[in-house]
Length: 196
Ligand SMILES: Cc1cc2nc3c(=O)[nH]c(=O)nc-3n(C[C@H](O)[C@H](O)[C@H](O)COP(=O)(O)O)c2cc1C
Image (cartoon, rainbow, N blue to C red; front, side, top):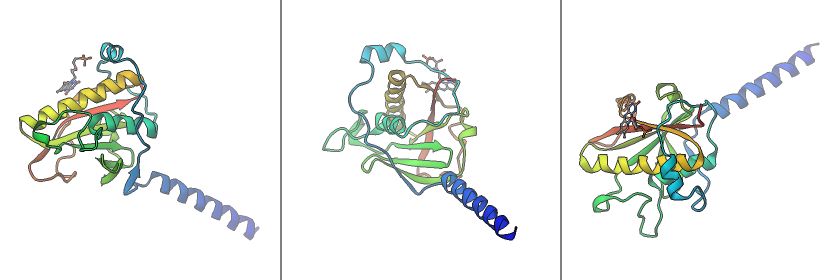
């Protein structure tokens, strides 16, 4: 009786431990290499691009996450230049991914997400499984770069049948919590998910 009880207790403890581990924020998430070919023809994607504010709660796949971040600010050339044009070669745009386990900074060079803030903030952003926060110095170039990035992601979403919406509302939701470089602000956010 005692042994059976102990075995059952141990099984529950292991299960709980596994659940806690899977829900815990990892310091770094290695993304798979982004697909750089395929997708809808460009004109079809441009025609299909639209705002959609209703999302299924389903998580996006690692391949989708990688494609989205690469579209936003991925490296396309040996000299480090990006999927979006950048004035004066300034690669100062920061793209954060709000996921269930935390808020992560996209590092294009290593194709990883680096934990910046642990915790689930997805409910604050349209209840979508992924929201990108575009942070940059609050000046014209910062806004232009963020705009190029959300348009690139909007086209990726149109190509892949994902819903997305760009918002300035809620851009300061994590002010004081998310530590940004001096002078930086989250200028605009973009929520993404399967259409609801
Ligand atoms: C810079 C920017 C900020 C926006 N801010 C918001 C917002 O705060 N809330 C919202 O519901 N939609 C916001 N939108 C989405 C627009 O309302 C939407 O793009 C517009 O209605 C046109 O629809 P479409 O994207 O389907 O063409 C924003 C769009 C842009 C480009």
